[in-house]
Image (cartoon, rainbow, N blue to C red):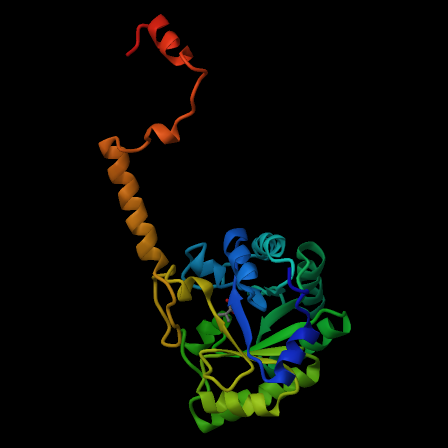
Amino acid sequence: MRAKVTITTLREKVARGEKITMLTGYDYPLALAEEKAGVDIILVGDSLGMTVLGYESTLPVRMDTMIDHAQAVRRAAPTAYVIGDMPYLSYQVSVEQAVANAGRFMKEAGCDAVKLEGGRNVVDVVAALTKATIPVMGHIGLTPQSIAMLGGFKSQGRSLAAAETLIEDAKALEEAGAVAILLEAMPPEVARIITARANIPVIGIGAGPYVHGQLLIVHDMLGFFEAFTPKFVKKYADLNGAIRAALAEYIADVTSGAFPAAEHCYKMQPGEAEALLAKYNIG
Ligand code: KIV
């Protein structure tokens, strides 16, 4: 088993110029595959509201749901750096509530850090969590919990003014104590400037190549989530196609009687099955 990935491991990778790998993970089997593949960071993202629970946005996701999933991921992935994603309104109402909810990820699920969305508007929360020794990953750019404000799932930072806002937000998060920053859906040039000015690991999802590491939603890159695929996703598999083909074959086998075959059946002691059937006049 590899050594536990810590924030020091991630900083050392950045110092050596090695890229950090990050994927979302929501459940035991997929997180186990990610752990075995050697993914550095697993984000238990509130995107599970869409990819796993079928909501149209991440807004309905509850804190208790996140804890259940984070616990499953931690059980599967003892060495990955596991980050719990703070769901909508778990940190916006008050700093006290934010500390209590973030603390649940650490105490109940054994997470290594939490992630929350926002820039200068959340620096008080980032500072309070840092003071409470809860490491925070900031998240700016397309922040899915703000779709009502952003007008939908839209890329960000595409004007000079919007780019400057993101650059200042990133610095403010670092100054408030964030241990890492996630940049979502923005031009590579903006991400490049933020990364060049950062003293902490910067991960991108749809933010181009100039960041310290890459994140994808695991259900997107495996071809498992079909509702929509953002421009920045590379599909590495077609799980949905494979699953649908397997299901169709199962239905055909059951319908035709090809399944179950002899090798799928339990056996009695030699001769006993025949005797039992004869006693009940069957066969
Ligand atoms: O919830 C999540 O998976 C995320 C990503 C979209 C960055 O926050």
